[in-house]
Length: 195
Image (cartoon, rainbow, N blue to C red):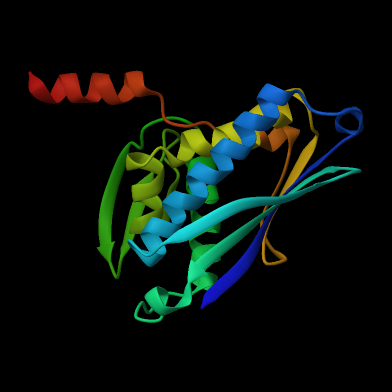
């Protein structure tokens, strides 16, 4: 038995009405798929998932993905699709909070939560899974590919929905903070630890 969910990306703007650069579009679809698989791993573990582009609609660029989950495998897991939506929102929030820079500090506060202080000294509490996706699983870079790049070149706004529930609404000006952590920063941090 299969449980199915619809995930949607809707790019908006006048320029987008004329079409979308195929490389920007392909990279956006790939970035969204990469982030969706990372979310799935953190919520459902190793259960199987099938993600398919179901349709691309006219008007604003609407890309519907169909996510199929094996109901028998996930019935033993206490997490639900609603948990995946909540985690997605936290991942988007954390990526924006960090703005592509390593956190100044982090402190596990219990209950599966971590307090993360960004480069400006602002602190927010996040789910440890959100931190793992953004800092260890390249979630920020995946989000950059389907949020920042299309909005900086093609569209003026983006809506992300999970089964019709909004997970993110962002416009071009807000998209600048959706940047993945730079690998050079990881390398410098690692190099510093070696000395």
